[in-house]
Image (cartoon, rainbow, N blue to C red):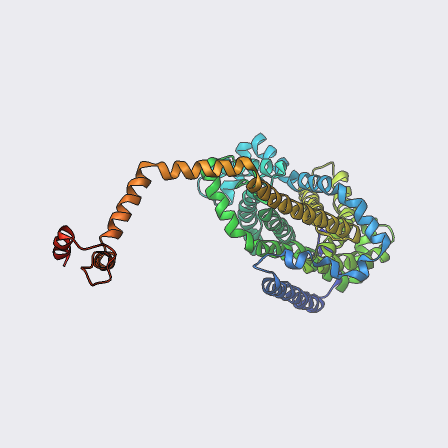
Length: 472
């Protein structure tokens, strides 16, 4: 069922060439519409996010009061929230499982891998093989740590490998042969690439929340500080990675849902072929799960993304088991195509679990909001008490006798300092030598030493007369 998201081989035998073209046209139109919806979502988010921070919209789940007022709904998320770290860790393990197995196989059959790389026409096949192995090891190890900055690095490592592998391993062969298998792999690889971008979008805002540049307790020293500045500059634009990843991740589900819905009768026959229970009902429910889950994913709102991830996860579990795992088991594990489908579906299921683990803490149920408000009130009270206490301590410190004595001693020591004394003396001398001061002193002296008959206060004698003449 999920192994043929665009056109199933069985469909080719049933449909006429004209019918195929008509359905393909509808698929293209619907797919283009969904893509435009996703691009429009980016524009809206870029406009509404405060300073590029998606939390301005993402954390506005409280506005969905009609849904959040449901007691069953709130109880479900309150129960699920403590398990969010476990869900995320399980998702990480499932997501990187295909890369771990791929790395082991490449190491075990190194020469065979070199020949495959050489067959793709890549230069320096041995060097490229070693580089691919190291890239996958680094990506898987970084992912498995669960540390935001290392997960972001791991996403970049896997992203580089997936882009190159998708181009040389599936796009070029599909362009030459038009084999449906390669198109299916391209769409699933796009979903895995989208999950890598989602990881970057989710993890970049988490980097450095412990107060260190990279969230690694000050590791890497000055280099870590430099890298931390880059992440701080990228943080306002992390939503671009997030929503680009969402579009790429849901693309395969959108096309799969549209294909199965447009070819309902053929989907029922496929379900019967693979032994899926209630084939008619499954043919109706499956596409609805895909389209509803994809649409909710595209909103970018945590509560809807979580519901959408559950819808896609339910479909993946059903389709992977009946359509890929059972045929793989029947072939004794030798059907390479079914093995690839199974592993990539497991990787996408891991991506759904990672998304659930990431958005659960952002879903604001009434109980969570009550705890947040209570914590905020306690925090404000502590701040107010702290401010009052600090002010009181300052007043007490000023009123203490010991504080006054210390201030007096400090002032005395300041005045008795030689540089202060010399400076004050020079200031007095300079002031006495100023013209207004000299003139005022002369007038005062004249009034005091005025001759007889004047208004002076000193009696005239010979010495005073001589002094008066000198002053005049």
